[in-house]
Length: 339
Image (tube, rainbow, N blue to C red; front, top):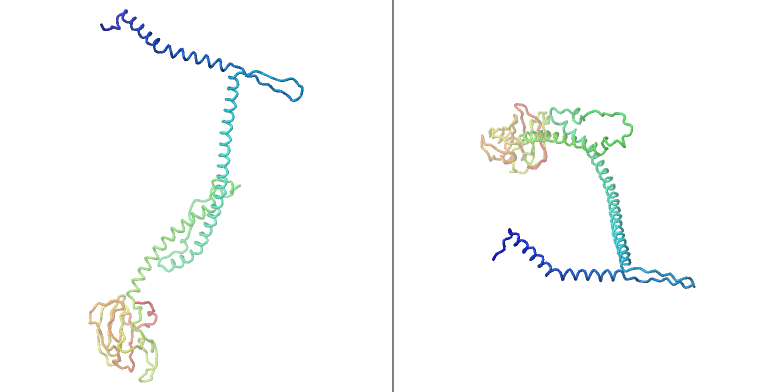
């Protein structure tokens, strides 16, 4: 029959059964523990006699000490030695770390000195670079040099400091130099942008201006007054004569359109080219031409070949430049830039 724990008789039986279970299973273990503890106390309370026997005839010193006391003293000594060892190791590590930090601090000071020297050098280089920038800026239109490197900013709140070196709010010379370089670099960036735009404009102007040699050769007669090789009288020469090999290539000195191709009893076979900005170039005494009227040509394109047509005894190219209706000296427009 099952036990009902809610009945008083059955509850007593349950308690007795539980008590008997613990007695049967743990009484032997408890007895063993009590027996072990008794032996341990007995062994620990045993005394050991320690004797100090002097070499002289003095009284022998002896005393009794229990094993518990010896164990306690040994434990304290071991603990002290262990703690002391840990403290010594930690102290050694701390000293080593302090030494490393000190060395790192010395290295940092050296690096700071190097950085200061480099900043000063950079500042000096930029100060030497400023006149070149100023000169280039002065070549651009509407330039205002007076306000180019003007420095702005707030006034000094403390014009008469007592001790500037120890004032943490006062910036260092290096920091001021870096700030100044940064401001001037921003200004330089704007200047270079303006110079770039100006040069792009000039590049387009040069590209459309007669600026290369029409033929490889030697100038035998310049622009201006000269003695005529035929009449030996003074006359005005409206171009330059370039002597070259027969059949040498004649190239257009600027892009444009072929204005006309004419035959003149004096100038011989002549090619005229219309360019931008009112420029007109003429190439005379040609042997033959390779273009047609109205044809669009590029700079350096072959338009004719050196000959001896017209009133001339040599193989030459008479090169002329007109701006509007006025002839100008071609020499200032010529350079040795490769095509």
